[in-house]
Image 1: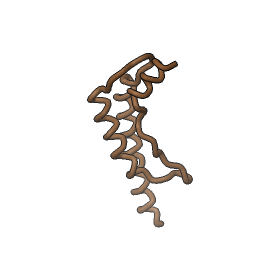
Image 2: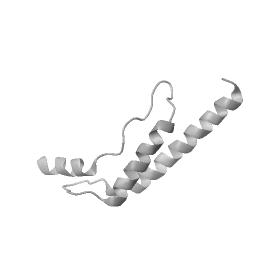
Image 3: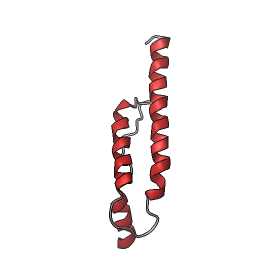
Length: 82
C-alpha cells in the first residue's frame, strides 16, 4: 500500500470514529441507569446510524468495533430483574 492510499484510509477511519464519538455523545444520556421500559425514538435512530458506520471502519491491528449501541430496553429490564 502506498503512502497516499494509507493516509486516505486513515482519514476515512478517523472521520468515521469521530462520527461514532458524536453519536455516542448524543445517545449516552438515553442509556438508563435504573429501571426503565420502552424505547426512545431518537436513541433508536442513533443506534441505526451507529450500525451504518461500522462497515466503514477498518480493523486496527486486527481489532474492529462490531457491536452496536446497547439495547436500552434490555438494560432497563436488567435493572428491574436485578
